[in-house]
Length: 167
Image (cartoon, rainbow, N blue to C red; front, side, top):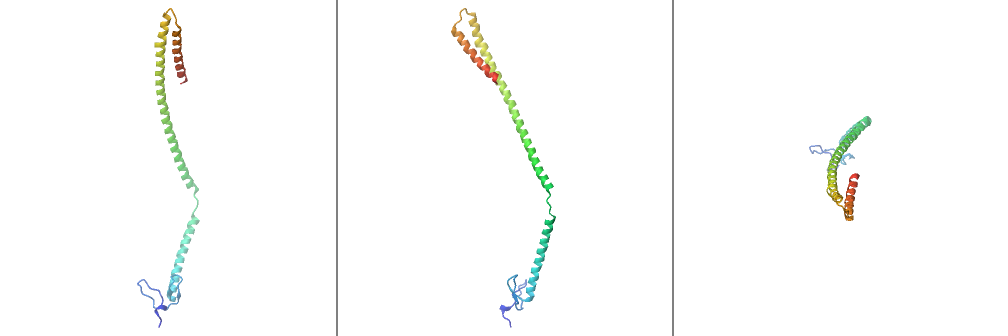
C-alpha cells in the first residue's frame, strides 16, 4: 500500500485530492503529480502558450498595420501654431489700441497744459512787461534799473518760449 507522501498532490476545485501515486515533480506548480495530472498541467501550459502566441500575433499585426500619419500630426501642430499666432495678433492689436488711446489722451493733456502755459506767458508779457514798457515810454527819463528789470523779464519769457518751441 502506498503512503500519503507518495500520492499525487493534485486536488480539484472542491478540495478532493487525487489518490493516484505520484509520478514526478511538475515544473509548472512544483507539486508531485501523477502522470494524468502532469499531462493536464502540460495542457494548461500549452493553452497559455497558444494564448500568448495569439497575443503576439495581434501585437505584430497592429505593429504591421501601424503607419506614421505625418499629415494628421502636422495638421494638428499647424492648427495649434495658427491658434497661437491668431492669439498673439489679437493680443498685439489689443495692446496697440490701448497704447494708441493712451497717446491720444496724453496728447490732449499735453495740448491743454501747453495752452495754459502759453496763456500764462502771454499774460506775463502783456500785463507785466508791456505795462512796464508803456510806463517807461511815457516817462521823460529812463533809468538803467528799469531796462535791466525789463530785460530780465523778457529773458524769462524768451526761455519759456524756447521751451514751448521744443515741445
